[in-house]
Image 1 (spheres, helix red, strand yellow):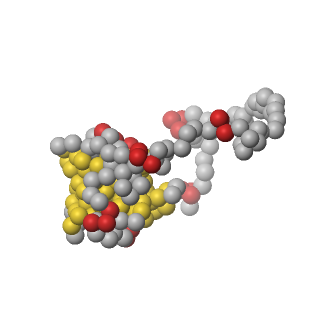
Image 2 (spheres, helix red, strand yellow):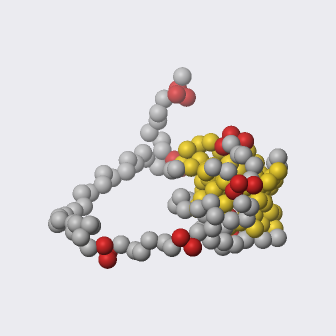
Image 3 (cartoon, one colour):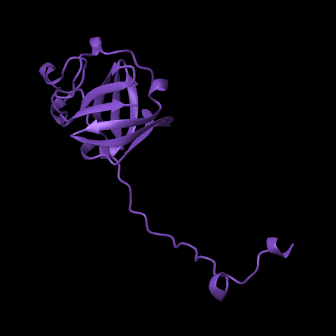
Length: 164
């Protein structure tokens, strides 16, 4: 049973060396003050977006490819797995899981270019599939157009198609 015992031989013939404990670091002082009342001075907030800046269905302008009422129904479970992506004249792979990540589910791409390289999660919102970057920001929206096909575009306006 000597194989299960720890020896003092360390790697490469040296003695066992334990890491040195970390030294305490100085902490700056914390200051506090009262925040201004947001209802009295609204100049600190950005202006609300105009109704004309969004495409039908609530998507930002330039990201709507198929009208949502014409899109086929989609379920989250039907999206799970490997997809072939066509975008900007090239092809790559996309993997979608049901593992929670922020407000969506974990996903990723391999061999993609452009905005799709930043994909980290996805979610189904109504009849659309929203692809998100690693920070949780939407980067593309797609709609189910056939049994195993989704079409849409990135926020930059590049067409995107998923198929199996």
